Length: 104
Image (cartoon, rainbow, N blue to C red):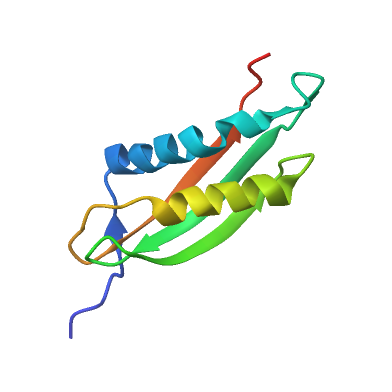
């Protein structure tokens, strides 16, 4: 009897596309009150898509952003929700990381 191995790995280049979309939407959140206060840290999400590329599950694996971790997580999830993933045979699962980088 065949064993269902579950979703396969999604190509790294396609994961990078999602990271870029999140960065475009959320990277500016590093700044709070100009450069007088910065939000720092990273968020790691576990993402599962079906064969059509639709997101079926998003798990928050970690969020150490401070201050305002909830605000940055919400931005990240909203950006991810509007991102269109390409179809992938059998679906896919992968980890997506977003890091706030100090640009001041």
